[in-house]
Length: 225
Ligand code: ADP
Ligand code: NI
Picture 1 (cartoon, helix red, strand yellow):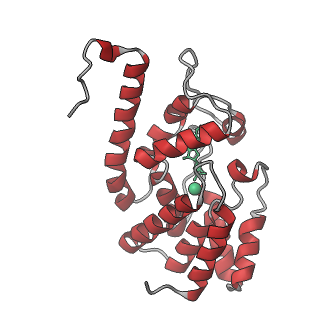
Picture 2 (cartoon, rainbow, N blue to C red):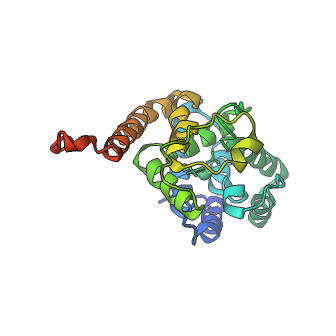
């Protein structure tokens, strides 16, 4: 594979940083986001070095991994320093990373650059579909969240603080974030990829709730294709 030496170094830094994660933010999440981001950027047009570095470093300072809520992006800044990229590129990458994350159903996170649109879409695509489902339950288990609490209603959080401090079930997280993502994508390339992944989320939710209610007692062969 023909890979630019700066990106190669960035890959190694990201791999080392995310190597032992078990919350759905492991190196393979970053790898998939990087690949998706490159694919979307090729089709949509965006500055590729900025997209690649932002994708590779996008989760280094996420409170869900670091456990601390601070906006300094110290880990990503340090990684960019190690790469000796010029100041302008570093600033662009940091700006993209600042705009990537979901912050609650009621919070506007529209990105301000084509590069941020691409990386945000790539990250969101990895939160839906089969992999998104696996990641949600991995995150939920690692963070002591129950799978499903039937009597609890989903909350459409109005602020990032409300969203961050929520402790609801993983099934509710589907209604609070995952099934909303398809309509919050920026690029047509990502929207096309999201259709099948979104449908799979809905199918999973249906099946989960059907089995929970023992609806398959009436029709045990349902689903055998
Ligand atoms: P973002 O920064 O936009 O949240 P990430 O790459 O950090 O994107 O992905 C967050 C991952 O963590 C997703 O896969 C999501 O399903 C999972 N996650 C976040 N909050 C919860 C939660 N409350 N319950 C279950 N999974 C969660
Ligand atoms: Ni991510």
